[in-house]
Image (cartoon, rainbow, N blue to C red; front, top):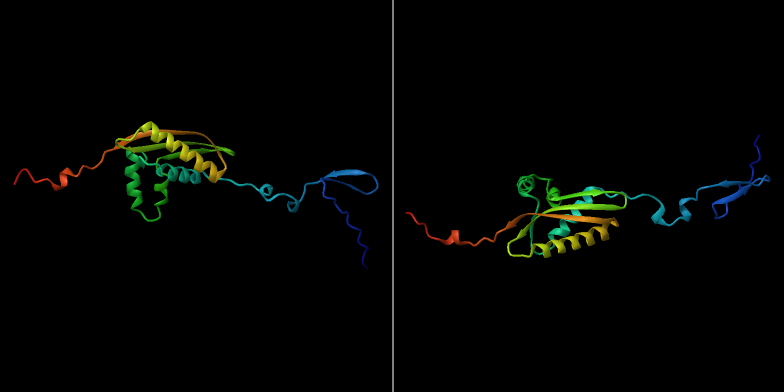
Length: 166
């Protein structure tokens, strides 16, 4: 034998509804269907993502020769020769701390000889903040820039000169 099925209680589009004749109010969670898509989950952004964005944004600025200190660049040059390790070159010289809504970025840079270091640093800071905030939605609370070296232009005088001794 089959038992009769009791009628389903319909929920209105609010967070509260009444059941039965006792008047008990139940708090319910809304289903995802009524919520905007932006509130139906959580997005986590890894530190490596912020490092890559910051590294690429810093390299876009004229006057920046490279990122990373001397030792980091030496290790990076060896790493670049290894297949599948090229992604690390993008984030070389970049360290980040990422929270739920904010990030702090440290950059080690090498500038070209002859540029205004303070002007280049200010432009790097602006470009990195704009790129990271636009792409991740994280608030950049600080961008610390350490100028580790100055790249000297190659004058080319050693290539075409004649040997002094025969």
